[in-house]
Length: 351
Length: 263
Image (tube, rainbow over all chains, first blue to last red; front, side, top):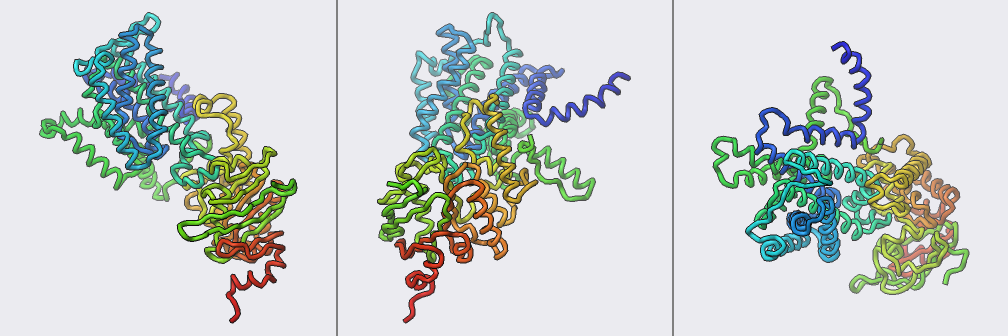
């Protein structure tokens, strides 16, 4: 007791200093997220939902690079998650190769696929790109159904928890592993977004003329964002395959692609944290609705609510849910001081 | 093709939109370290000339020979729009094109984009070379912000800054790319008399401090006559006259184009 009272005053400023570093925030977030299943009373099905949130966060994070940071849309990204899932499953189960190699392949293959398809599709813009990616995803889904030798079609592909260097993961440790991957990717994205690449993307989004005049090749950065997002989708797929240990073509439908869009917009466009919050929203919301009496029995209630929420957010809260905490903080300080609210933080500049 | 003492030589440049000849067989030449003015009444095709030599438009015919900062002579017409700045020619826009949601410092750093050598991977993993490069250009950006009289505003967002400041930020951004030739599209538009005076001084100073040439398109005669050593007057995409400010001021056809013909 006595020790902690002398310890705290020295610890707090250090923590505050560390908190300014994005990696520290993300690692702390990861530790909390990884510890959630340990909360007493957490059921196994709730732990599964958490796993769903984490794998989908990885995909949403990649999608944020595309939608939020580069300003392009795709309605077919689930197909790339599917590719990642089947590729990783096949490599481990059928080829007997190590799990890390499978994850790598699940990232690289969709990345290359994204590059090649991007070379063609990115000549299109806006609606046309959306339609092209939608069509593309459907054709890839047909491949999932028909390529029986590779995907087992509708019978489904069964897989196991990962095994790395003789260590056999179980459900809990696979979940922790997924969280670690998510945190690592969040840090990587943060780093390049707050560097020349991120500025080039921001310029491209805001003024294409300015971007070009300053030497930003629009095509190169569009393609890069597209390939990064497909690569992340592939990693998400590999995580899915080895957490849920099962995949079939019905999972990789266009509804899931739309959920990526919803996640990025509702969570907060062009925000790393927003992608994760949004992913948590789209994954957890249907589950929460199930508990609500009356609503729980209505089929598709969550779809309707997703639609309503996306409209509400776009109209009244375009910054997304990621701003809720800071807006409440501002509101409180305004109410308590009665003064003008402080200017929006530009902490990434100061770092 | 291009004499050593020149930085840019435009030869027989033509472009038309539909039936309209926006630029018609225009030729002019800018010397090293010269401040050169391109003037003409509204709709004369001045900005179109800019857009042609910076490759926002591809001219129908003609050449634009340029001494690059790498020491080569190239025809700008053969290059892509995003490669121009790397060759040493950088532009501003008539309607200020800045990234509103970024800070002033970040906007300047975008100006250095062509200078960055590290790729997205090095940046993602914050490799030493990427961090050093970032810091190098941050330091440079801060000193240019200081130079432009915007010291202390580094972290302020561009959105919401007064118009005169926006013009300065855009000019500051051009300096980040180590240009050999800065081309300014109506830099005095929207500025008041005092601000225009200050701008004239600034342009002259930049030419000395950054050892570069300046090409400016302008409406504002006080600025053009005050800073330009040589002027090309155009009307309906055609060259009317070329010469020193005094020659241009006294030129009959220039006067007619601006003020109309005496009947």
